[in-house]
Image 1 (cartoon, rainbow over the protein chains, first blue to last red):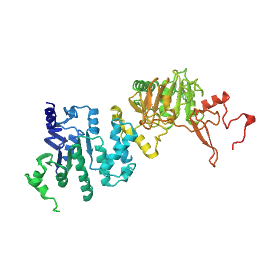
Image 2 (cartoon, each protein chain N blue to C red; image 1 turned 90 degrees about the vertical axis):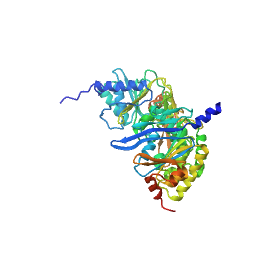
Image 3 (cartoon, rainbow over the protein chains, first blue to last red; image 1 turned 180 degrees about the vertical axis):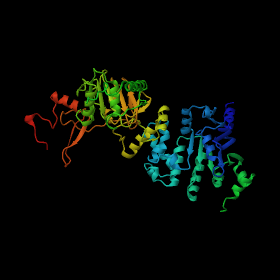
Image 4 (cartoon, chains in turn orange, blue; image 1 turned 90 degrees about the horizontal axis):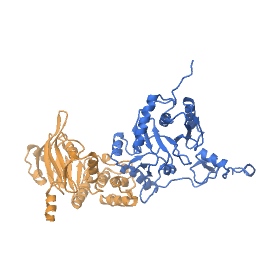
Length: 266
Length: 294
């Protein structure tokens, strides 16, 4: 009986978007977006600039309040809660423990003036860890996992290269072992070889920790490598959704066909 | 021409009333920064305009006022503020810590233990302990409201990572009444333990920043630290060269350009009281035994 309840919980979506809409004045950035994300699943949101991808990501991560619709999240205790009905304190706690947010620009997600160790340790200190040695040991482990050498632990991220900053940002987010991670163009502005390394590195924690992830990207290669499912957006609407291979190899909508065919052949 | 006439203690009664309301609110919520409509004072910002306004609001005709600057009664800032209240309020002034009822201070808490009949008023330049970690005031207020204080430990972590110990020596962050993290104004961390469970009322005024906060009597004030790097009050490893006190906070005075220095009490009243009691330090022998400073 107990086993049945656990399986039942795993069948419950971790995040449910229901009829999400957001307008900026007369501009409708997102309209009527609904989907379910399951535990361990990676969803890519693709589309051109201005299609509403980033707005959607902010709605999903409760950084923006939607005009219509709601977002529900399954908490660690198994109950599914409406994010808008939560208090701000609870939402912020969720944001720095159970969730991660990887910005396109690492300077937005990192504290550039404090050391890498403190950047990784900040989330731990925020939830009450109070032992310097243990915080530092955890930070060292995580830096090694994202392939940053442990002797750079006391250097500030402003001395890091773009790729290292992005990896540090990922380590900072994963240190509290979140269940859901939001990524906004995680490989934007990096050169191709660094992108490949970053993507390779992101695949392993996603597998090991059973992370769910929502990745916003305009790079279809990123979507193909990382995601299980793809949502294609145009003009604030979701125009096509399906399994990654299916959508990218056999696009149905004209816009998606255009998007797929506009990749330069290797 | 007539000499200008001031209301008692310079400020008008409506202003005092406004400041007293802020003070009462600050006492009701220990460590919380209460905004108030700070006035222009006849001195520049950074010279204690916040402390002066708090003092003006609580001063009565029967009070005896003491003003110290870095522990000393005879520096410019201390003298000018003392004279200001002598002129505008006509209150009695004193340099004796035990005789004073209101003590305004800049950057020190004096050595003598405070009593229940006393009020200590601090001059505060920057009331926000999170200021240099998070520059947005909207964000720091939210962090205080939700008691999200992970960031303050990031600062302490950085200290240990860089210097091997918590190198913050002044304005050392404290947690008041197990709730609000507070900047104790730039007092040396040597003074932090004196704020804990203190018998006297402690008021903090920041004039430029327009904030008042308070520690009511008998309130817990805990200096933040790590389990494996506990808080340690720092002082020079020396005795006062004038009164031989081993338990007071010492100023380092450079005496020549060849590296000689002497340490003397920063609290002048404490030092003079001890000398009057007959304590003598290494540079202050009885006249017949006095030798040239080497």
